[in-house]
Length: 404
Image 1: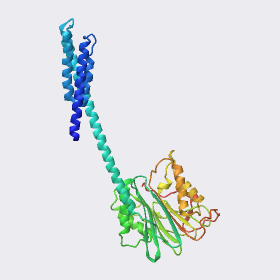
Image 2 (image 1 turned 45 degrees about the vertical axis):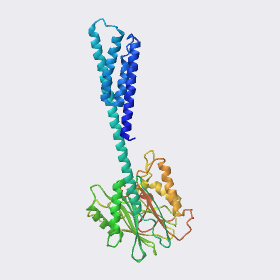
Image 3 (image 1 turned 180 degrees about the vertical axis):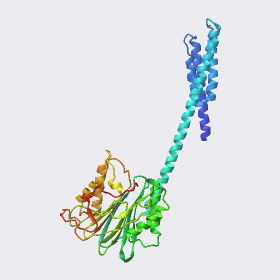
Image 4 (image 1 turned 90 degrees about the vertical axis):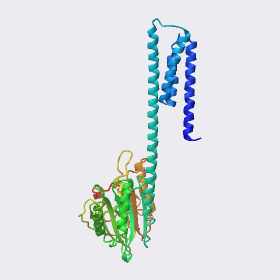
């Protein structure tokens, strides 16, 4: 049986039920001898016919109801004091039945329309969700499976999106003489648009014939390229760095991105790299960028993150903030990178509670090996490294952020 024939049989069955109710009302009306007004009993039959059979069926039952009411009155043989009263009552009964039929039919039609719209909306949402899942899957396939192996160094990383797809991006690049370039970027916005912007950035970096160093020159070129293609209001923040593994020298530049942190093996507070760089990529075609330099000594760890970390929100709408990041890193200084990362993320989870992430979150950690990693006792030391500023003095002076 097809769906259409089933619906037709269903409708016919309910009209038969309405007709049976009409006959029952007529019989009761007749047996009561019209001493009790049972005109409203016909309304039930009319309503059933209109709800399940439509306006036409309701109007037909309204006519039959009026006829049944008059017939029961005439069969009983009672009369009104004035003949005109009967005609008036007939019109009243007919009007009540017709209004019932029309009102019930319109209510059913409105409900059917609402259900159809809800079904279409649900299907559209499912289609959008499938599309977002596909975009998110494709986006993750564009990210490196693992950081490059560098003798004497260890990596760890974390990547999470606030929606199906996100705008955070990280990547690694092999450079001449064994140097390694690595990027952490944050596209404005959320979801599919941010993921598209991230893919654009990846294409620009992966297809260029120009050298991917020094960092300030790379960001300057990316800024010019994006400025000619991005819609108004779109931008990307980025941190690009080049490591010389043999010496530990690190060159970097920022494009409106939070400066990375360094945990020195010698002890002391986590340090924030001097915010050398320039504006976010995209809005200002003629922007200039400057680079910074520092050195990773044995046991030093570099932490690069997107603002999804500092802007993680508690149920009371309090940001996680830079100070909590510093505290979490200080507590786990010297731990293996995976434990350090897990400890920091556990603090974020405790802060946000049951709330989901409002923004994408990326963490990239790099440590130069050379001392036992389980040396957990912090040793005070003077912070004196090139282009490095103690974070405690600059926690409130973060660079411009992306929204993605």
